Image (cartoon, rainbow, N blue to C red):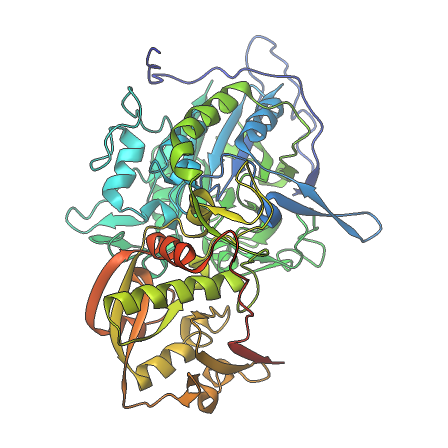
Length: 596
């Protein structure tokens, strides 16, 4: 098959028949001048030009339709009830985007980061090359980096941008990986050696005199949610200060219309994608870090496309001058996309902010699949099948990954404890960060493997990060403090409850506040109180062992021992503790007692 040449110029979009979408809309309503869309000179453009901005975020390599709750969105009905809609899959996303572009010759597509990383096996097994290829076919124009773009470090991110075979695993096909046709923007990620951004800080979209600048940033707290090795040699700058800095740079270059792509997000007051975010008042329908960012980003920025929290919202938040400004997010996993209209004033070169309107649309699965994306998925599935279809264990029922203490979280912790005891019989317990448990295991067969069979692909979906399992020595006092860090410090507002291995028990009292929510005198290991002066050998992944997710006490461990990757530990545990005749039952989730 001949190689596909890299694009050298602006693409020409292919338009398909339009399809009505399910949407939630927000608008900044005010009147334009009476002649806003009149063209008194038919042979040259009019003063005002509508530009379509299509956007999405947090795809996480979900090329195939996500399963379970990850593949559904909730829709608010006129009578106040809700219903769920199956959504997602790049074959459908491609069709929806192509349909949306029909009749919009001025259309640009942007993303808010985390397009790769924590991906299902179909993409993750191949270092997310399949996802970059899919994004090229989706005609993505530009994206910010997210924290997951740094899972394998800045050098691997540069390879995704520029192409080339993987330095360790080589080429997967007879063609060299050609990289992304779109720029990754990393304005606030500084290379410590050069002092410069590791990738482009901004990019300008141009068409027939219309110019819109895009600035891309990820959350300043990326080092706290990525392994230390992934961010080695990098500094992550403040999001707001960085955006404001490069907005001035763009303005000096004559670019007055600016969109910020921010991989940081918020939390709407409803889980329904079409909730009216502005109904209580401007900005009141959303909380979280993006609100503070939006309130302080320079008024020169006309809209913010956000992500990271996997939430859906179309909101207005006032800028520093008090003017409302659109802030959007399209959930995650390719289930939604946002369609925003930016009205460009050719006389000023700026966006008429009062004319901005935006809507989230569901990527429904009732449209034809895009054949080129189907072919791409088939190609990579053929390569992945021999590995992914291999049985690794058997279960007697669904093992979910939701809840304060989840069955899947307990199972992963148990697997790491068992593996830790192989490395060192003195290993006492294991702790697993909940964000690292990306999915559960379902009893019903997803393919031809049969009900109750766990395949390698399913295990990979649970633990796709390739973290190592590390052993460290912690004092009892450090262990108690680590448990209190679940609900205090940086985790106080949004607790991160570590998943405990069997034998570790305690009470979580939600009627109290801060660190007091972990009741110290209830913490037990195999029925015995934790001795603050004793030393405990603890198994955890490399991310936690580096103090990630706001657990500095776990980063203080002594006598580290680095083992195999966490997925291998899970595979080993499932293989050793289950069979077709004796499947593994879901853990009972009785290790943490919750008082409300």
